[in-house]
Length: 91
Image (tube, rainbow, N blue to C red; front, top):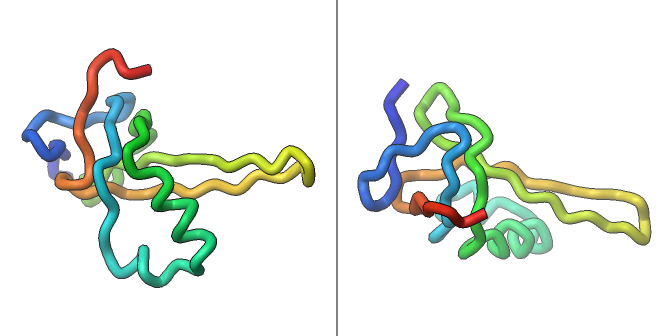
């Protein structure tokens, strides 16, 4: 498994705090409009890396609760090097 790095060449590991700089890929275009809006709202936000997959991609997740309906939906996103930046003391 390759060791992931961010846009600046800083190492990324499980537990790293990263700012989501952008999202790209056909998977994004294939999402329904409402889901795409939710996922795109993640850009600019800060996340903790939850896992690194077998391809070396860090994964982050965001949840959107709907308290009125007692439901919640979430998206997990695998990030490319150019899509994230490690941040210190962010959370």
